[in-house]
Image (cartoon, rainbow, N blue to C red):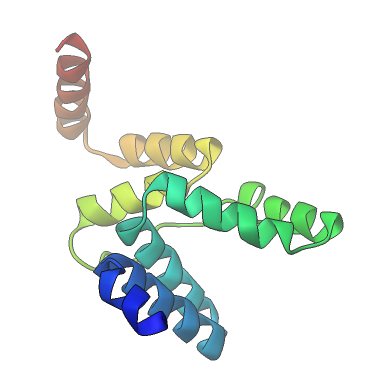
Amino acid sequence: MSKTLSKYMPDAYKRVARTVGYSLLLTDADAWHGLTVVLTARLTPQERAAMAWAVLRSLTPEQVVDVAQAVLLNGVGAPIAPLTNHMDEAAFWADMAAPDEREAYCLASFEAMPFERQAAFLDFVQGRLAA
């Protein structure tokens, strides 16, 4: 039966399953961050929500609160060094960051730009709003 299921299982699901196994085996922060990257790349938001629901249901209410606080209150921290390019890494980080984190980094980044770059950035953003 399992060989039959495996034959029809999408490749993305197989990759996710392998990465879950590696993360459980390695049990360090990098392995779990790698799982986050793979889940984001390979599964839809609905599929990730279903997985989260199943995992949260396996915990006690106190554990669920602890996990939610760890995810929501602490945010994701500073962006890491880019693996492919700066824009891809920034977009990935912004998808996971809390709103206050995004706003803080956005303002600090904007204020650190030379005046000419600030003006070009504002022209770009305002041009997108008009479109």
